[in-house]
Image (cartoon, rainbow, N blue to C red; front, side, top):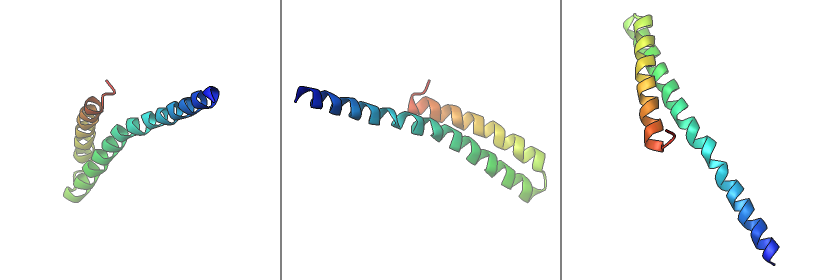
Length: 73
């Protein structure tokens, strides 16, 4: 019985390890979302390069904030 309990604990530990990469992907989604918003604003205003660079800048800042809040750093 003790070995079954240890195996269960190992399986639970492995299941918790899978949650790590999901959390890391959130900052990437925030970055891409900001980039797309910048693209859309630049497209609507007729100044696409400025919108893209603005989206990149805001995306990097937002990604850093999300990573800090999650505890990746």
